[in-house]
Image 1 (tube, one colour):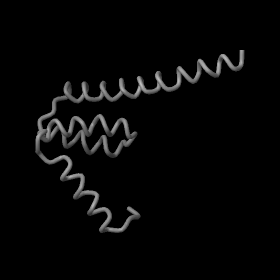
Image 2 (cartoon, rainbow, N blue to C red):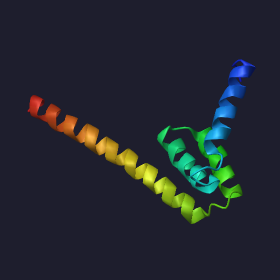
Image 3 (cartoon, rainbow, N blue to C red):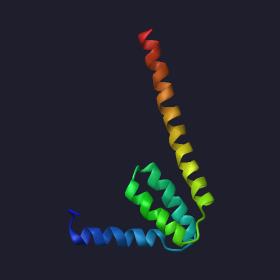
Image 4 (cartoon, rainbow, N blue to C red):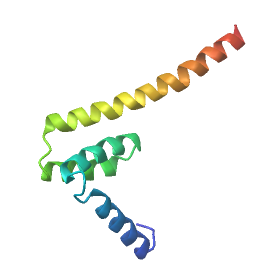
Length: 94
């Protein structure tokens, strides 16, 4: 990886603190991380957090639900954002 070692270490320190148990348990945080990985379009993130989720007791069905939420939010964003713009453009060109 072409980054300064101390920058990478800072990132992993931050990430480890973010997913550590607190008001939310690690299992819940890893489900959130799976959904966020999809929203961020980060395949390496998804692979990492899916593995961590499994290690923390997340079931396949729970992961599927988290993924479904991420996909639904992403689709809703596209519908809301682009269907309105498409309607505007269609009016302009007809």
